[in-house]
Length: 238
Image 1 (cartoon, one colour):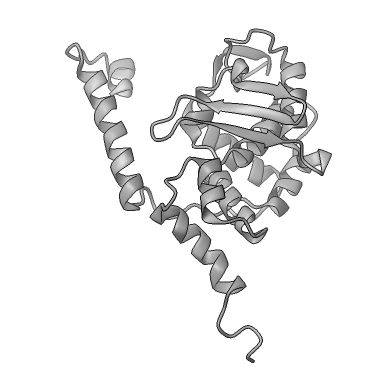
Image 2 (tube, rainbow, N blue to C red; image 1 turned 180 degrees about the horizontal axis):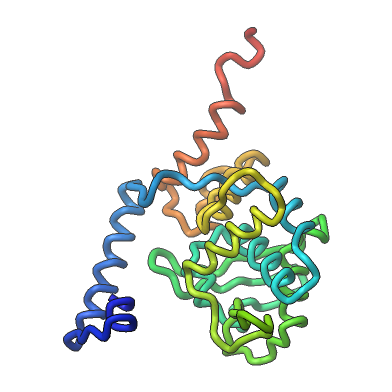
């Protein structure tokens, strides 16, 4: 609908866009509740081992600093692309223990996610955010947290990244690191669930971090992939 208006000058009746957005939000909630998936299948999980490579491959430029911070924060909050796209600087409140990330704009479950300092500085989402905030000069608390960069000069613009652009950053970061997996904007979200399960966290804790329903079928499916190896009937038998 946005493309039709912007690219082809199509005139819409008042209220049509609002009705369409409301219907889409309703469909997202219904699909989340039923466990129905969208797109071309499940996104590959972006794991901690991938974060290490991605962080190391990001150059010390505005784009590299932003991409590193965005991927790490995306993973840490197990966010959906639109949740990060609409974040403002004030939504990342710094505390002695880390960051309180306020994902207040969500089609499914708005939430505040505590993000502690990481034990490894190179993949710490808190330190990465602080580096991006300083490098980009993000002093306006109402400004977008994840900014677009000028196509030619790579200077920081006032406008924020669109949800699909968040996914593009994730995909590009994996390619830059030479990882032979095509990550999508959903990969950090699934990666947090997978990595957290591997460390022994239960579904309720993981669901709270990522805004899944406590007994989400989608989340259970992610965790089952881990559990089939960690709790296998053949372990210790053969």
